Image (cartoon, rainbow, N blue to C red; front, side, top):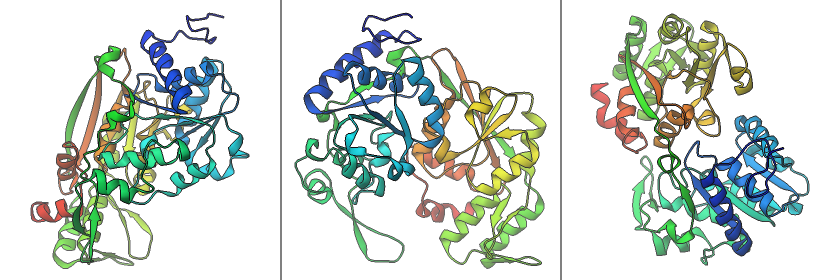
Length: 412
């Protein structure tokens, strides 16, 4: 079996930059007990982290990731000839003897960055971790550098921050403002943070540095929805309620109105009874009529959209089946935006759009590889929904909120 210059046996040759990062990461983790690989998507951070694990001779390695990414990560472990336990964040409570783990690899570590209070998974990991830690993320602080605090919090005594909690850290590092949630009392907003994460010596590496020349081309298709969809939307905006034969669609608050119109723009709606209705299949029909000669990855937002897509197209939700069959794949935006390689896809079709700027930038990169020159992303925008409004916000690295909706409500 071929052996590279580091003595890492495996079925592949690591790239030169990966070998250099492994050396640097190994030095950091031996000194500090942790390192952070801030490597952009497709630059090989999974294999690089496993290379560090092998270099430090870790015995028990737990790789925590998203559920859909586990098969790919297990395949990478086989390539580099190392034994790991891959588990998703939601199953951490099932892990036996966590305090006996030598090395934790925390994939998509930015998901631990909720503030001002730590998330459930962050608190879980802080209680469990006693060994060394490798953090992995192409976007360590996608929305604000305040998101770095609770990632470091899981390190316990190895935490580089001296403050006892986020509030103390925030007082020192944030320009605190007051914001109002709905019509309630004001709360402190810590998102304007001036902490320089470069002080933590994150190991960064970009696609450009790795030699990627991939261009993401976005195509916009205007979909003319059925008259009934437009009638329902206009009625909700005017009357705040639409009464059907056996059920009701209620939009008695701005938040409900925004969500109902967002759902209806792609042809589904959650009814007041709790049931979901598929009202307009125009988008799914368009994909079936125009994209089925290609291998397509479809991203959707609401569960009823998946049902509609399955009724019209031969799709799977499993990445292994997608890679080894002629089926298309359907992925929900948030669960599919990270850790999944869609290099077998010819194009991505966005059935709807998510409110998150992080989702926007991450899911578009799913097809990127060092050898692909162009990635085509097709947006299906209805002629009566709010998808275009959302797009214009998230592409500028802002989340679409109720405030943005209310600003543009009359022009929807």
